[in-house]
Length: 110
Length: 117
Image (cartoon, rainbow over all chains, first blue to last red; front, top):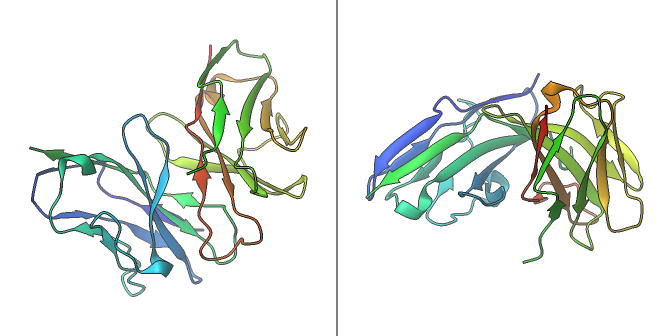
């Protein structure tokens, strides 16, 4: 069965500190991995997708198939990064059916 | 950017009653989804809908649940005989036509908080 694990419920850092939100997955095929973000009182929105290999708002994530991980990183956290972050997996060609992790709340303190 | 709209933002109902949660997907989207999130738990897939029929559903989506697109713009989730455990935030989502491919981006609504008393 496919599963996404985000081991930290809450990650608290100071402004300017590096951030790494962990995500591990379990899937025997070729996964498609995403990070979604939910700012306070806003809707879930796509932050990153592994296929694009992009950097959004300073965040990057690399798919490591050997370690089955897709950790989200940012070298210098900003207060406006405070939000819930969800890692999600989609099986190849499975359309919009996403399997989400539990979510990690990132709190960036001034 | 266009948005997926959900109404109401909060719905309270008595156990055993029927509720209808409404969504207006982005106008040129053809794939529609419902997800839910019980407080403190994961966002879970419920159902996907394309070409006026369900394309996939999860175990949660039992025979009390139904979806329809009654008029070409709205996409509704109906729950009959509601149970206490149906209490959750329900998210509607839609995506662009002709994809279902690796670059597909889901657009989520802001959710309806359903409270079953």
